[in-house]
Length: 123
Image (cartoon, rainbow, N blue to C red; front, side, top):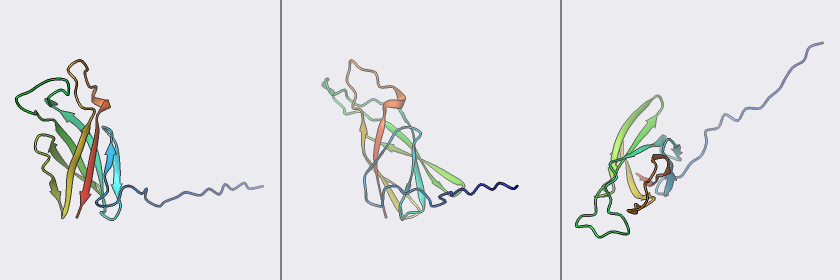
């Protein structure tokens, strides 16, 4: 007697946010951008010197957000700054940092895994 196992495997790519739609990622998370043919991965935050919400600062400070655009088997790293919020471009796509949470307080240390970057990709 022969036994066979028939299993279904959903081979369709996962759907993610569409172009011009805000989305939020935690460090290490990756999401496909529907209609763009790329995936965006949020890697880490470096040098968070933003002025704490409970302090008075002469300058607003900056946090450096590292991300990567993954396309097929290649990836390209990018850096976005909270200080100027200038977007980056990748093959006709514009990637903008909309926000970075949590916002610092002088009495609290932000753990690397606690960051959440909100991004928007447009064409």
